[in-house]
Length: 168
Figure 1 (cartoon, rainbow, N blue to C red):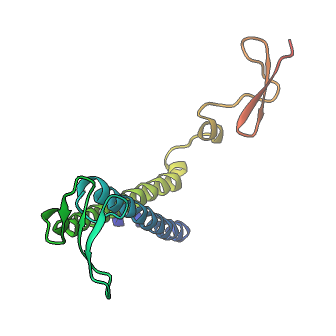
Figure 2: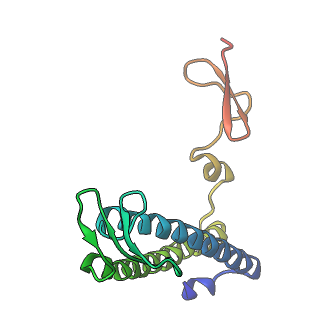
């Protein structure tokens, strides 16, 4: 990205910084949402022995600190914090967090590089290739207001769309 920024003027550099900041905020929000959904998925589907008040009943609890020492499921299986499934839950959340951080940073970098490349192309395209404005806007040359199509209908350009009047 650094080698492309040198081709931008100051106005476009400000646009890139602003866009980068907006995308960073969007990526953080998206990563937080994915992290919370991922933790819920891990707790409910992967680490099923982890305490869940909707599926487990408390067997042993400290009355003063409310710390849960043991819980059991509907099948009568009793689980404790020493259970391997319960012990590995923090490692699963750590792996999820690392994966989301890597994906978010790579996604942010890719999006910003794409935006910089788009700005470089837009800022240097008119000087490099003389293309009529109609071709850039519509992909094909526009017809004049009084031109007719091959089927005899008149066609007038209105903004980005064409309005076709059936006047034969």
